Length: 173
Image (cartoon, rainbow, N blue to C red):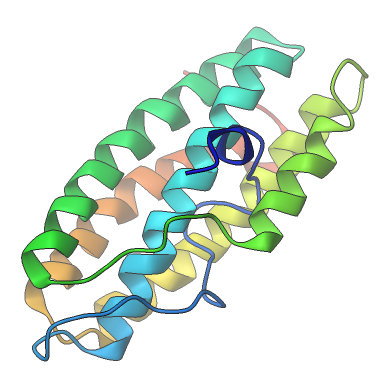
């Protein structure tokens, strides 16, 4: 695992890696389910990296606190997802998408400047909106009830994160 890339990766985040090569799976899991699990896993890795980056480079305490929350929540979501993938016989991607990696690098180039927080919040908003679309697709079109349940469990977490970054403003309660 290229830990530095994970720590330097992500704001396109959340569950976006649809272009990733799907992992292997058992016959009971549909292509939609495998795509969701890989996208969610890559999104979780990207969100963890983005949250860690916000804690290091964020200018406001709010951005740093939201970053810490992303790390905590996405580690929890990813642990459950990884357990589910193992149970289902799905091999998950080992890296974030090139798009996610490029997004984090772009944000890191703004570190230390006035534009970091605003760019980070905007990237998080975009990523969480995309993630919600991926989640809804799994809920509507997935075949495996356990994978659909994982998507339903992730939805309120991702929605809460979106509320915290909506409009390029930090809204941490």
